[in-house]
Image (cartoon, rainbow, N blue to C red; front, side):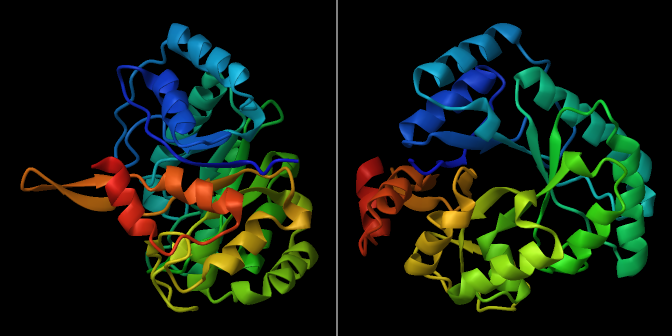
Length: 301
């Protein structure tokens, strides 16, 4: 079975989901991830049903299963901060409705940062909010993302995620998104990925993994910095990431690239370009391209 591999793509006001699908196909993706609007604000344009219908038809023509497509919740939602409780609940509910309207069933969520009130209180706030958001009628899975531990982030180890999941009323509607960069920066050694999966299975249950963000890291293990690097060019390394992508226990789970764009000088200005086409080709061939950055720059000239 072919791996399910894709990348983050844009979602622009003019062509909406149709543009997202076209961008994903340009990179050779058979899945993709996107925000339904800017991640740093609440500005949202009404979803155009005509564009959505055309997007799903294009997906069907290219064998992209809607069950593998992932939406990412905005960064500005922080369910751990009691000062943002009402806003976080309301805005995440709205985003979930948008995901349903667009025809998908997965939304990745950063658990939140406790902003100084402490881990225990922060986790309690997340649990409270999610229990207000998730009902028996909720059709969209909320995927808690593993975090690097920058600042006061929560969800930096499997026990914190377990605490949240164990206290959700409708546990079948909450899953997990592993992020390889975040795992590394949180202190998990991806050279021993089998041990990581074993720990996850014993703590939470491997069936809860519903998406994996594939990113190399600029940082050494346990740095708690969260700085993504292009595939094979960071501290995790190509072979370790290939082992994650092709792991037998993770078949059928969408893998999403969120690696950095590459700068390229253009008429005395520096523009940035996505590396996803070249990285996906490299992943499918299981062969590291030592000239990756150079080839990306040449491709976009």
